[in-house]
Length: 223
View: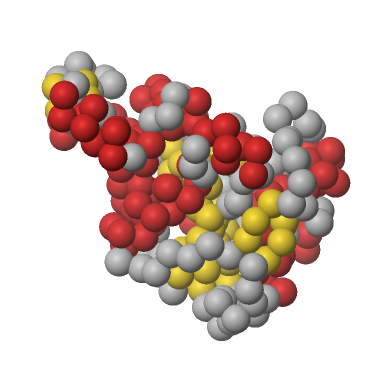
């Protein structure tokens, strides 16, 4: 991290959209991150106010809502890929602003923020968990506590798996670190992208079993 700060001083960022020197996304280009997606149930994609899980899908989900901040394209897609595959941890700043703006517009409030865990193998390869970095940046913007609540056991990797396979694979692969940390709280779960929602739902199931009053999730985009 210290090396990255030194490198930033020597070779500052250029805006990913217009090329201006100084920031990854300059002030003038921040509005281009705002490419909202229709408010739908994350599980069935039916229209649903404020991204609430619809009544039909709520029977099989512990998530009250999954807020999707943007379409998965353009500048947002570029920043997500930079964050995940190019060691671009600085992308968390503009992406967290996008998440905060979306949550404020929906007038949602929470007690604590946490994140979707990754495998130890992915953490070693990347050097960080992008969901954790997003959650910490968002927590600073929203002035909320941010805590680690779960971890992934084993070497689960869901890329390429279909919905049914993901639901089967993820069951039991996530462990809750402590139930005392979420009892009676409204928990906001953060991730970069949602595909089927299997990982988020498993996290929510454990958090609810640990006493969480309600679990919402917020993601940058839906793949």
